[in-house]
Image (cartoon, rainbow, N blue to C red):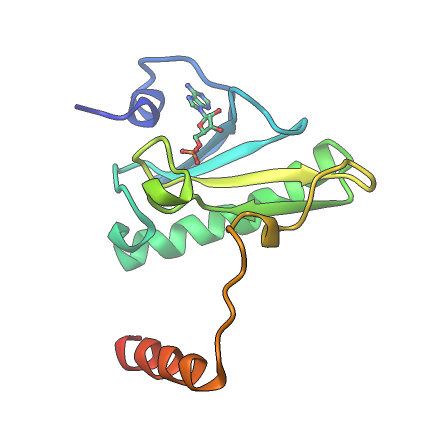
Length: 139
Ligand code: AMP
C-alpha cells in the first residue's frame, strides 16, 4: 500500500508543492505548526532515514539546504527548526521519510529540540565512554 506522501508524488491527492526534482519533492504541511511549515521527502518510499540510499540521501539534503532559506525568507522567519521524526517511538506517523522545516519566530512560545525527549538520563563517565566506543565501532 502506498503512503499518503507517495499519493502526493503521484498527483493522486492535492498538495501545495513548493519544489520538485527527479528524486525529491517538498510541499506545505497540511497541519502547519507555523506559517510555511514544509515537508521535504524522497519521492521513493523509504520508511526511515537509514533506509534511504546514499545518493538519494545526498539529494534529500541538497533539497533541504535549498528550501530552508526559501521557507524562512517567504514567511520572514527569524530561524527554523529542521527535524525528522525517525521511527514510531520518535513520533513518526507517516512511514515515508520526511524532513520538517518549521519556521521559528522570536517569542513564538516554542522550544528547542532538546524538549523532544523524556527526562534526561544521568550517565556516568564510564557509561558515556562505553556508548561512544560502541557507536564509533558501528559508524
Ligand atoms: P510525522 O509525525 O513526522 O510523521 O509528521 C507527518 C506530517 O505529515 C504531519 O505534520 C501532518 O500534518 C503531515 N501530513 C499528513 N498528511 C498530509 C498531507 N496530505 N499533505 C501534507 N501534509 C500532510
